[in-house]
Length: 339
Image 1 (tube, rainbow, N blue to C red):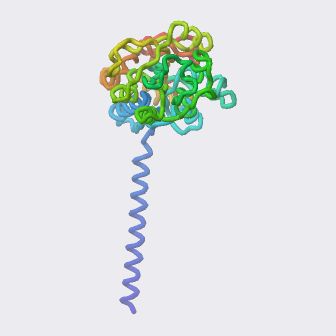
Image 2: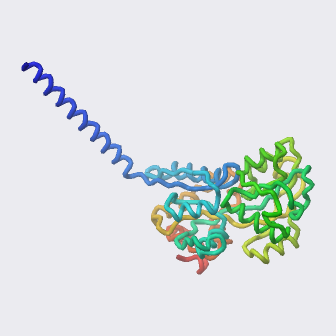
Image 3: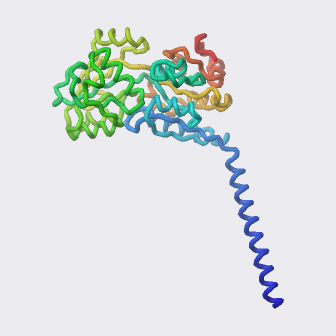
């Protein structure tokens, strides 16, 4: 009897120590993570420009700011509109978005009429998001108005590309989504659909080069980029003055042998006004002080520089953490961009 009681007592003691050890381990793990600052940057389709560049930035921040506990990651998304909504809802710390849509969100205009995001802030201007209307030779499409009745990928639902496609079709081609057979696919999905004869074309808006456009031009499917004449640009600019004229250089894509005149809008790195000032300061400081290490990672980054960090941005405030860094570097910030 005594032996049984002794064994029972020893067993209970071992169980107590076991639970204590687990609790201590859990506390240790909690303590290890308490110093972490998780930074998620929401981007766009994997076939576009936002996602690969977001991954490049996250990798840089993890490498250079590990001692500060920064744990950054890039997340693919539906693009600008979804990114703005995710930031507003506190689902991410940073995002990449078209500058014009950021302005609409800040003012509660256009598609953000009932969804104002007054706390959105710019961190830095990035590259121009260049409009690339890629069509198959077999489609017979030679101008924007020729897209009428065709199967065309307008961009992911709720994306900046979808918004731009709508603006361009209406103001340049005089047609609406009701006049075409619209699809809402990612860029790589659209490229595959074009190669399979299921689509006549797509708008692949992004920094140059855009990987899905590189893919379709390198495929066996004969494709071309539609050109925007000065008259086309004038029509679009009158309706949407944030558009600029850009060029796709000859030879940027396989079998694309001539320079193509097109249009585009600046993109930007954005965040919420609630994001910690010191964190934003360190993120933007690390990005620009290590620029030479990342510029060769993607051609779109060649359009990004400290001198251009506040240029081409509409009147949405820049986050105080970024303002602090720019002032240290002697960058003049327009009054309408100051927080």
